[in-house]
Image (cartoon, rainbow, N blue to C red; front, side, top):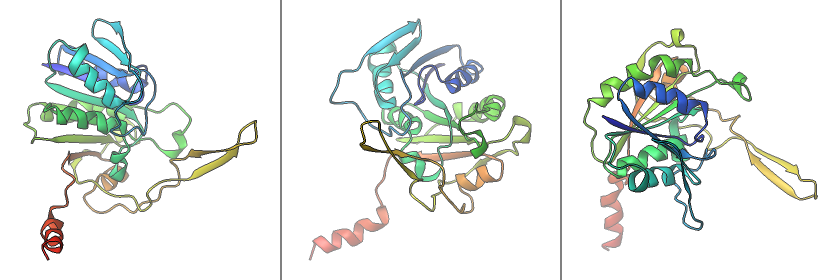
Length: 254
């Protein structure tokens, strides 16, 4: 089996080495094509106004001067000599839960794989507020990664779907198990906006991720992580709200 690994934290991020070790337990043909630098929050963006460069670091290791979507696109069209059987994105440093998946470059890289008809899985290591700015422990992902992925590798994915996995912010021995759950939603769309002034006297703004409050609904990814479980959530690219189609069509038929 051939596996393509990518991420949004960059080619030298600790999580990509964690994922490489996990993937090595599943396959012996592993390729890595990832952004040259961190692209967190890039979502499913594609670079259209500047050229992208593809740099080869080793026989099967490349970096891309663009977004996670750019990385997957160039991997499939230029770097690899044949399509992969599976795309793994991560392990992201930080959560990709609830509505955060719409901002996530990690999840979006998996989305791009799903669009190409390739089974794709996003993996993220949640960390606690106390770990912000410190070294994040990937203990849960390292110990449980293969256990979570192995049943999925042999599964057939529905068209234009992917799997989103989050590991709780606890050490490996404290993980309570695995839950298959739906996507949750945060109470607030975003965290804080920090305002400051640069040396020339101009204001600038920095988006903060802390301060996002949520009350986890039952059977959601947010609840699973809060309870110390690994969350496994199937996502789809079809964003159509099918229940509204008939009522909306009726408005235009009058």
